[in-house]
Amino acid sequence: MSQRSKLFKKFRKEHYTILIPDMLPYHFSLISELFKKHGYNFKVVTAKGRIVKDEGLKSVHNDACYPALIVTGQFITELKSGKYDLNKTCVMMSQTGGGCRASNYISLIRKAIQKQFPQVNVLSLNISGLEKTYSLPLNLKMLYEALYCCLYGDFLMLLFNQVRPYETKKGQASDILNKLTENLVYKLNHKGKGFYNLKKNYQEIINGFNEIKIPTKRKERIGIVGEIYVKYSALANNNLVDFLVSEGYEPFLPSLLEFMEYCFANGENDFLFYGKNKISHIFSKLANKIIHRFTTKQTKILENTQYIPYEDFKEIQENSHKIISEGVKMGEGWLIPSEMITMALHGVKGIVCCQPFGCLPNHIVGKGMIRPVKKICPDINIAAIDYDPGATNVNQENRIKLMLSNIKK
Image 1 (cartoon, rainbow, N blue to C red):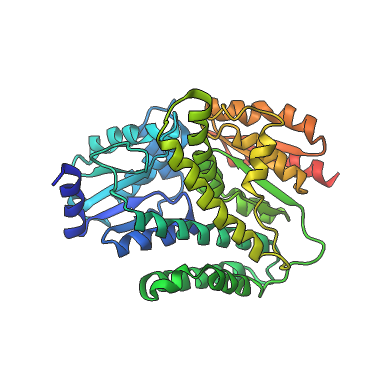
Image 2: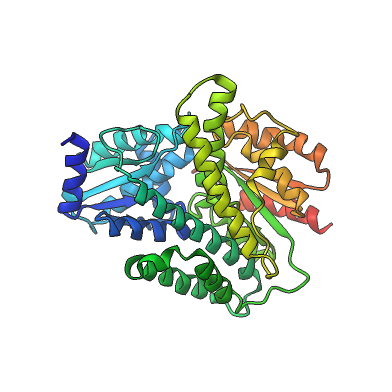
């Protein structure tokens, strides 16, 4: 038995708690249950507030990427809380195999945590062959089930963000979301194949959110693009979605599966552009076809409903050719400018581009591409917002308000 097999067998047998960051609240509530079903006690960390940023600043060099700092600070705050037996606790971070956040956070987190908590292991969740000893072993069944969790998470996020600005009483949309999530968790654990009946479960989600009626004249939609952690995490972006709703707008976040399709498309491009990954690019091509087939079905079921589906990834990929090469794939690469163009072509008049301060790849393909994007879509308004521990909410919100005022004009 390999060292990795022994390690993870011990985690299951001795009921270790594995902490994961709260980057994707809609998805991770399902994914954590999925791994519990396979014997791993996953727990999404909930530490928030200034203390998280302060712990991150104390534990990681302040030149480090903001998401790495936030995640490290959140883990350390949680480990200091006294809620866990530290001899039976681990932390886990996802890795996608890229050149920045996707690969290097683990070493930063491990260095910071082992200084204070040497007994706590730092694990990786990836399919790229990284961290061979400390990466969670994944089989095809787990990957298949995780795909369904992502599909449902994307669907819940899409519909929740569309109805929330129109709820008649505060918290109505959140109550519906919680009930629907609990129902999916129950099906995952008790109903067997019921969890995989996409059509039926999608319809139940639609029926649940239909309690809130979206008027014919909708509020203006505001797109959110940028670095994956800052884009999705309310802790990292200072509750950006809540702020947009409070200002009278309808927030729109791209799907997680859209980012996954981008990653697999880059797996193909590595071979087409650079002659790399001659074998693995076949897997990337197959994975992209499978995911796209699922997302197409998701779009179809929203026909003749009050909801606007996600844009088709093939269209986003095609739009990238108008502005940037698909060979630009560091960080979120060509995805950010092509997402902005696609949103603009689908009637989104304002976009917030979220970037960790000092993140060179995303500043180039985010803030650096605003002028070329506006040449193609002159009516679009884009606010590029830097996030770091020293940035104040007031300054960020005022810059977003300036962009929103241009839309009103």
